[in-house]
Amino acid sequence: MKVVHIITRMIVGGAQENTLLNCIDLIEHFGDDVTLITGPSEGREGQLLERFNHPQLKIVEASALTRNIHPWQDWKAYRQIKALLKTIQPDVVHTHSAKAGMLGRMAAWKLKVPAVIHTVHGAPFHPYQSGLARRLFVFCERVAAKRCHRLLCVADAMTDLMVEGRVASRERFTTVYSGMAIDDYLQANDHRDTVRKEFGFTDDQIVVGKIARLFNLKGHKYLVEAAKSIVAENPNVHFLLVGDGTLRESIVTQIEAGGLTDHFHFTGLVPPTDVPRYIGAMDLLAHTSLREGLARALPQALLAGKPVLSFDIDGAREVCITGETGILTDAKDINALSAGILELASSPEKREQLGAVGRAKCREMYSHQLMTERIRKIYREVLETE
Image (cartoon, rainbow, N blue to C red; front, side):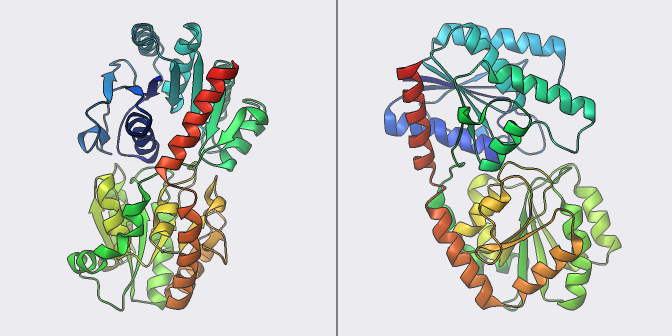
């Protein structure tokens, strides 16, 4: 097949890594001709394409495709995408992210591309927006949904959210979990001693990890707040924050104000290929984001045999199951967050038990090869039936 993927920007992030792996798998396992159209990959998150890509993957930058809404710029981006698609003449256009999803689907539909697919990695509308912004994004998603043949979601919770927003009927959605290179996470503990030594962690210290950009809605402030009572009760608990972003200074200020400087450790910006190393050093993972389709950090930690503690948001409950793979708490519940971390920190047996169940569960769900097989089957179904 001739396949074009379109995404707003290729920063270091879950949706971007998912998309890149899908592109590479289509080339290597199916012999497809694949082009990736992306806007400028600007931001402190880092550029994913600088870290890894594939020599047969054609990468084209649409200079006007930017993340923020700008009517004239967006019109230019639409024209750029449409011109590129007209030249490429793809069998399939597969879009990702809100802006590229809207413009890409409109352009592909206008050109009568045989199969137009969109993946919802995270709904662009959420409770933390203004009412006007939420209505605008819902409206845009409804319009765009009429201009594609199939909608994919990375979690059942995303389908629920989109159906509740009346974006499209439930039968138009299919859940395809976001694949990753699972072997790297299955072998994460090979790095445990080396990384713990780098940070000065002793054998008796419990390392609670969090993997997320240091940005709004990622919830670092809730973890820092909870750390006050956690450290007071168990001084052996330390926190390892993997990632970087615009909120680093304010997070450091909060840590210092709480007298927790010696208990928090930052990796800074790391390439996706290094994430397994840091997970190997952890004893459990805390996910305190307020919105995220289904954070890759949860299955990544579970694949490494680490139990997870998460706020009950979006798709988290599909892998973080209390008493089975970890502990799920209400969002922003500092007391429950503290209690959960202390409970897991106090019992190596429970951590091992929950981690083992999670490992087995996610091993069956998150292979990127399986993800691509399912997606390509959907391409074929659309091409044969539409």
